[in-house]
Image (cartoon, rainbow, N blue to C red):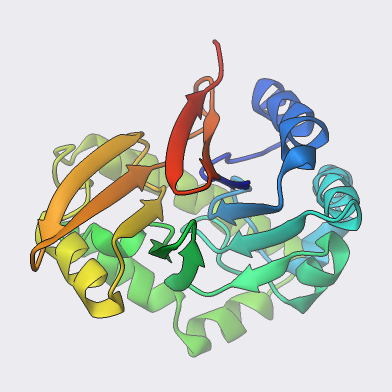
Length: 240
């Protein structure tokens, strides 16, 4: 059984989400063969030296114990935590996953993504993403003191929230043709992603092939996960 989660946005200021995560890691996740975290595990991640923060250390410790129990753990960067480095992988026992990632799941060719690159109608966001994923930006950012990076991350969150309030929801959702092109390019029939906070299952046809797109729930509300046992995915929402 494989499990998939994303958009937890863990932070010390969000105790309900944190406790739900800890319970999930010590409960359901222990019965899985693999757990894939498809981005935005943390509200933000400003560099691996932030592992020294007590809260971040606790989260890393829970993941480390899960991986030591024999569960294969994979973590993909999201739009809030794209600065994971080798130290994070070593501290958690997680493999740092590329985005996109293609693999065989339940006898199907599956495509795993965070999902933000599918939202191509949000041109302002895509321009910002290209900037912060550049080698020059990340080098300069990581050279700043940790406290300064935290302040910049907090400021970016506030600006992002304000920008979202001025955009139509449709602009921030995936673009259907971009989804089809991703499935076509990678020869996949199953797409699993997060980012949009619109959980659910979508059927579509790509070049005569029947495909599925599963969107993972965020953990701002009740939270949840996708379970894949055999070839049949199942979306599970926690009770509020």
